[in-house]
Length: 243
Ligand SMILES: [Zn+2]
Image 1 (tube, protein in one colour):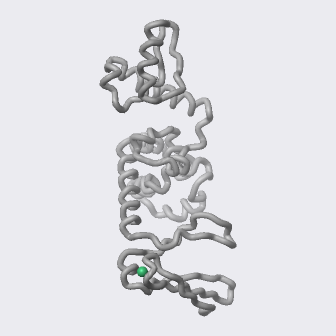
Image 2: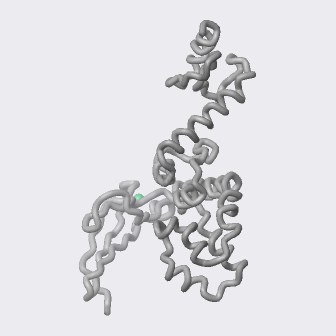
Image 3: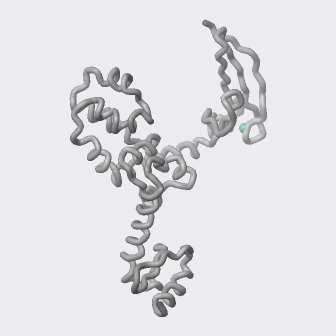
């Protein structure tokens, strides 16, 4: 099946002093492809075309387009850093989940949350047909990577410490484990905040620069304080004094 060129068009490049070319191809089966070539020598040095779809529908997708090489490099570095940080913080939980599993089916159930994630049981059997136990472990561990962090957190059943992991708002949404029920989620966040505020309870408010004071202690239990701004500390101190 041969691929044929349908048409090509030229557009201004990012620096505005030259052009890039868009070329459309299709074959007999109806598959089509669009390629982009930077014609401006100045932009060719600095930019690469990123085919990542940022929004749209299968029949009308909008790709990210020309991106500065240094931006892509910085993004790659960030992904590697987050992946490494996640390994330091959570790989032990991952290992514990697979430690005592004997059969491939048991491993598959945990790894994919009973088929929610890739691979299917049949694919796993096919991929790992002649694997030794060591190779099987390596196979499972390669799923612990930046791109599969949502699956990782769901397998481990943990709400990660996003700040410590160094991820931003958009990444938090994409990695947010959604198999923890709201009660667990609420508790894990609350316990974490409580721990943070309690562990810093011996620090003078005037010395605290990066810990949010979310709980004010009083004799009967604790009261959550909705605001997290630094200036709340003075209020909390007053609250402690008068309750
Ligand atoms: Zn240019």
